[in-house]
Amino acid sequence: MEHGLLPQLAAWQDFYVIVGSSAAALVGLQFVVIALVAEISTPTTGHSANAFGTPTIVHFCAVLLTATIVSAPWHTIYGPSPAIATAGLGGLGYTLIILKRVRRQTDYAPVLEDWICHTVLPLIAYAALLVDGILLPGDTATCLFMVGGASLLLLFIGIHNAWDAVTYFAISRRKGEKPEAPKAA
Image (cartoon, rainbow, N blue to C red):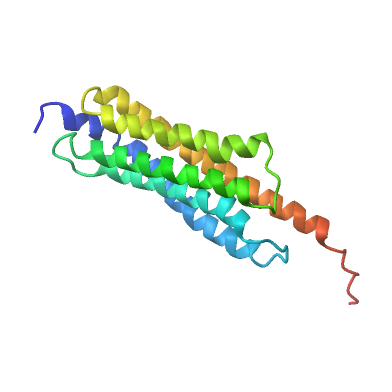
């Protein structure tokens, strides 16, 4: 075991308990939201859910995975290093798939904010995880801050995108509904 290395990981324990718990709770909340949205009679092809809904769950799960990796009882920094890099590489690949899905879906015309929050920022966060995972053994302190930053970025992206989807469905439902006549008492 390397002297002084594990205390650096231990110092992040509270951070990842908070961030990981938040991500896990938001995954559950997102499932509830999707169940409620499913009751809206807005016709879609399903491509928009794959382009805009599923990535939100994946980002929350990536935060949860990263929190788990960093919080595991590693004996050396060489354990979490490839795990973080692999998570970053997987996230990069997945974000490229999302880019294709966003371009292919026809239910919604993405605006600049959508491109930034669904493709650009996730690419940055996952690239940071990949690089941090590779560089972690050489500059542990800096890389742990970068992993924490990438995790928070993914968490905030997920929160933004979940909120965006909920408000979109709420507004589109409200526009599509006809007001009900008052019921007699």
